[in-house]
Image (cartoon, rainbow, N blue to C red; front, side, top):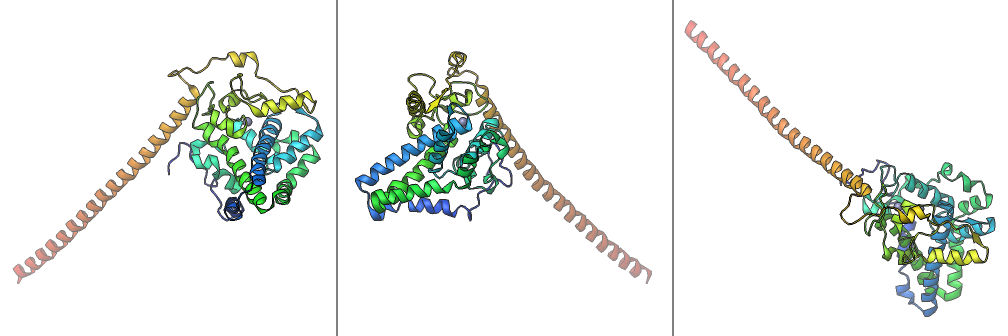
Length: 347
Ligand SMILES: [Zn+2]
Ligand SMILES: [Zn+2]
């Protein structure tokens, strides 16, 4: 299949090592057999939004972007909370996310939808190539032993939450409260990598395909303003204007009143005043994406034409070869006949 950006040969899903990931998707529907109680439903809702908060506020805005300041114990808490979402450790997550911003929608972007929508959503996570944590990207985080500890035992918080869910609400609590909400949290997070680079509106000219989407904001507690975020990633508030809902930011703001976090970075006035993309106006980011798409289509057409021309050339060459052989056969027969004739004439 042709994509706008071709994936490298080692960018492919390893189905064997993906079995646990698939198995958890199966367990997420175990509630069909256990039923869903009110406690389990509440637990599912709480486990979903609390963990989404730890991913958006902790893994994303704090560890990946340092968009606010936190003491070491609070940072440790954010790391443990993030790890409870079973999205690997904070160093792994931040290292890959920093690369996403560095190489957005280029062939070095790990999860650009230009490499395929499903690849950006989930394929890259199931690929061996990206299992490693690029420590050189997160030296500022890796210097803290407590963060390295969470990274090393990243599965422990998720495991503890599974046990707690079982204790609180029994088997429905485990299957609906934990496994189902875990899978929802995964795909909620993944939507930011896939959908917010495909659907939604663009406000700012960025050299990528990022978009703003209220729908993804509701699902991810404020991460849907992805075009804002790509334009000015340092901001803790991703909804730049009052009407752009950003629940993660509101919670962080309340926590700042209690001194738990501080220095929440806001978008500067020049960003808020920045020229916005108007309907039908030139948009360099989308132009680049369309240009890449057109180039990929031309290359594919070129390859097709080459293939077609090659097939035609081979047919002509085969025809010429058979014509040559026929000529040689006729020549041989005529020589034999001529020889025979000569011999007869000589007799
Ligand atoms: Zn992005
Ligand atoms: Zn980001």
